[in-house]
Amino acid sequence: MGKRVLLIEDEPNIIEAISFILSRDGWQVSTHSNGHDAVGVVQDKTPDLLILDVMLPGKSGYDILRELRDEDRTANLPVLMLTARGQTRDREMAEHAGASRFMTKPFSNAEVLEVVRELVAS
Amino acid sequence: MSRDTLTGSRIRERRGMAGMRQADLARQVGISASYLNLIEHNRRRIGGKLLVDIATELGVEPSLLSEGAEAALISTLREAAAAAGASVRPELDRIDDFAGRFPGWAELIADAHRRIGTLERTVATLTDRLTHDPHLATSVHEMLTMVTAIRSTAGILADTREIEPEWRNRFHRNINEDSQRLADSTQRLVSYLDGAGDADASLTSPMEEVERMLADHDYAIPGLEAAEADLEGFVALQPQLTTKAAREAALNALRQLRSDARSMPRDEVAEALERHGMDPSALARRFRVSMAVVFRRIAILSDDLLPDPIGLVMCDGSGTLMLRKPVEGFPLPQFSAACPKWPLFQALTRPLQPILRAVEVTGREARQFHCYAISETVGTVEFNRDPLYRAFMMVVPVAVPLDNPRHVGSTCRVCPSSDCAGRREPSILVDGI
Image (cartoon, rainbow over the protein chains, first blue to last red):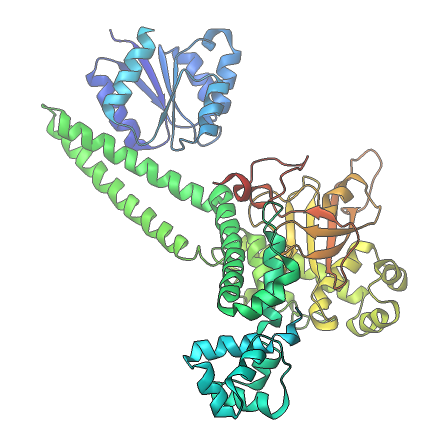
């Protein structure tokens, strides 16, 4: 049984593509597409890794991550943040919120796989 | 050397431009070459018929030689010198001499100065838009999301050796959908950016549409002064108001302005201005209205009643700018937060206390204004309920130079002040982009 990855992203075709490549690589992928109840979903599914988009309907990825870091159960969960903005300020915000890694769209499938493997291995 | 003693220099310059030898010009006007040489070196005064004859030979108006075309030019050169900063020290006492002897170079400097001013205004507008424009940010985010989806899906199709037909078909469909959405987003963004060179183009908020509508009517809304004005009908016909939110905002603004007009009828305001001058306190007493009503009413009527239009800015308790009536020389940021040194924001800290400040706007033009500001409560106050405040600032251009004006900017990104305790972010005019 592969490690579990939870992908929280609101763009259906990105969800489909990332789910496909991770599944082919042996990961168990579950998905969610809004920020409003994302914290509860993470706590229910207890994934080994979270891939979290920044701009989500209902609540931003930064806010979700801050709440997760405040909870003992998810304080150390590896989190890869995805954003369409690569400015220094956005990277700093992701780091301050507690992101393990930060990836700017558009990214390649190989980059995503590589970072996911690194984060879970570490 | 003063401007009127430089007639000889101008003759020499014009003769050179005409490619005429000194001896030839002297012969044409019936004087010796040596005498013309003395004139051209400003060692003999010249006027009357001889000046007219020389001007005729050179094909210019005599006044161009006697007075020069450089009055405005010298004024611009002085502005350029003032804007140069402490590191450059042009010889201001020889500015007339320079303009007279080298009109081409002087015009070049003046033109460069004017061009720099224009470019700085464009940079300010575009930087404001790029940094804070929500429409642009949303468009770029949308496009990057589409590109990401296409790149990832295309990568799967290209790199996956064995892929089930069902998945392959689904990914082909996804790429088709995303590429269509990307094309649509790109077209919308290009249409938007086509208007980027026009600072007034691409309105992004309902209040901006209201401001455009008021400006297009020169702030003289038909029927506003009449009790029976059909504001709903008027708003429905305004092409600038493209959304329901904009029409509602316009209706609220016009109702407020109509109420102001009833409290301060135009003809009575004209008479009161003649009697009291620009004295908001006297006007508030005369019409028994709050200072905010006076500010709004005077600003709206100023285009009609006063020699110079008056600006108006208002904000809520968070400092967010609301309805704005711009005035030349006092730039108002379209998207980003304004200068915290504006008296408008000082007023928020001192509710109900009228504030008058002499200010000079930082930057090349360094225009000076009297800013009248006050903050007032919204609606009626009630026990055990925190009041909400709005601040209003009337921006009045001044003709006479002010003593020790306070320096204020537009917004930090385009403010050249190097030493400001209120600075929130670096200035691109000082530190670059």
